[in-house]
Length: 114
Image (cartoon, rainbow, N blue to C red):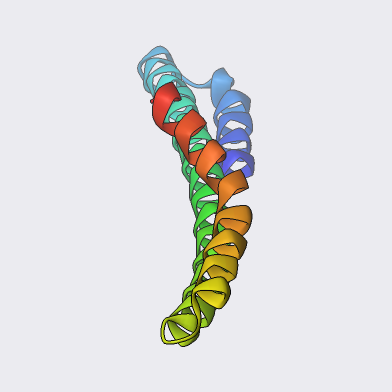
């Protein structure tokens, strides 16, 4: 898009040898071309910012999905241990706490920062 506006500006600049009325029209068109170039540049920049944010969200969602899979496996293991002896249930609970503890701290920090 930027190449197009630059090309248009270049072509319009070459028409500078026209009569005064036409020269004024060319100057007006050059101004419009510059305004369009500015607007397009801002749109492209905004689109890039949006793309960056979306990529960050996708990465975050992928991490959350991986974490959920891990926690689901741990919970499934705990569920299987419910009808076992007290020692087995306590060990499953201990395993669960060990696996979740690092993530709990991260979540606490994130909640405090928002």
